[in-house]
Length: 324
Image (tube, rainbow, N blue to C red):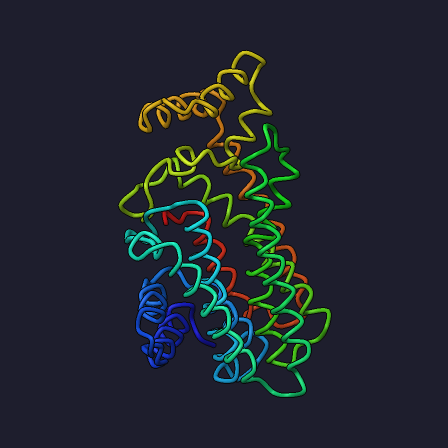
């Protein structure tokens, strides 16, 4: 079996062999720029890992892995534009480097390009592959709209927030793995279990992302510390703090949240002091560990030899301690 690092290198080489430098260059330059930023690439590598785990030929899964990566980058380009996020992976975001119109158009083009790879599958598998891909893409849009809705709502419950990140982030992890399992010819039971494993891992991944936004090292994390606070994002940390705070502290949090004139660094400091007092970092880490445990329970139920599950277990354990 392949290791995660081997599959990462294999996928990266395959991606680099694709030609996206076309005309008009103004459309394709942002696409090349976006895809050249070497993030974790967990989702496409998960597709290859699942295919390998279930005994498939990973070369047959490479087109779908590429489609997953293109879909993910499409969501990032549009998400950065809607959130007005200036930095990703330590570099300017597409809308910031070029402009909003080009970010929309190049993101749309990425979405279309993803289908050119999705279609490079065994014709007998294509209907199910398209169903998984289309459902996941639409759920990502639904999750993004929920996230935008939260910006206008004074109160958001933890259940609301968890439903949002499930759609916006977690289901793509599940779909990535399910695609790999499908291509490898896995059973229906195993496909569903590996999907549920991925969704739970994705939930933990997003909560870790929320945590790192405030408590991570900016140089390692690749995004400005406290960006979620500056953008008035209702993250897990903020919603958990509201639910744990007394009436006075809750009012202070909401006042800070809606304060428009407070300098960014002062606002970040104020939030962190309250979060520290309420032990929000510890509570968030507990929630992350809970989702990862649920994911591992689903992986335990997958009906293949235990040794074939070890690469995925290793990735999950690494995610608990990740810093970016």
